[in-house]
Length: 309
Image 1 (spheres, rainbow, N blue to C red):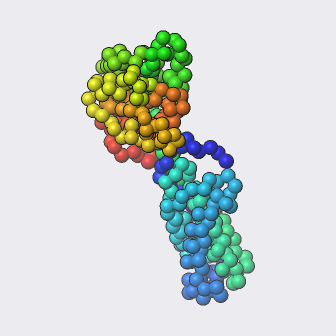
Image 2 (image 1 turned 45 degrees about the vertical axis):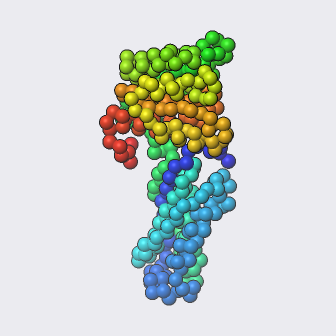
């Protein structure tokens, strides 16, 4: 199975369809509720719900996931029944296979309950109609504009070259892969005044879109990054820190010890991340899907995300 442990919980939705082709006589008996096994539609709907919930058992590489909603509707024509299903889940992976399984099971149930009057029926057109949620909802770069960013590494030991800058390199690589142009990666000591000057330069002189710091967010006596950040920002963005700690604590209880803050200075978004490479990677898994949208909102764009984007 694919490792989805680093993915975020988002609302996933999928719609699928299947078509049962039958004789006009069979369809007529269905409409009049005169089939030998009586009305197959309620039974087929139950089958769709059951199939959606059991997809991971039927399809080997599908993950078990919590199903929040399943619906199944039928459109009866003169020689066919069109099945449409919809599945929703708040989870880390999509529900298109669940929707397809539901449509298939509903069509098979109709076939089973109608085969006594029509042995020539055919199931066709099983396909996905729509899927939303997850990575596809968060393009790497919106409106074709490249955002400028800086990585600020805060560490006494790294600034004195006693340790290597592993977390800064990881952060620069991942921001670049996400469509940002990292104009600078800089290492400074855990000194409040030095940190403040660097952040002010990035926001005021270079007018960057994003500054991400790594290190100095813990409970140690030299962990002063949050205090330095709070002093130079004009508005806080508390939801970012809350999301990072909430996601981190699901993997390690030590995440609750992070005091990282986030906020805005001018048109620059500043975010504090932990100093470890694992902490940086886990935080960026949460952040990257929303950073471009956050920066657009800061520049006055519409809060609503267009489906075509």
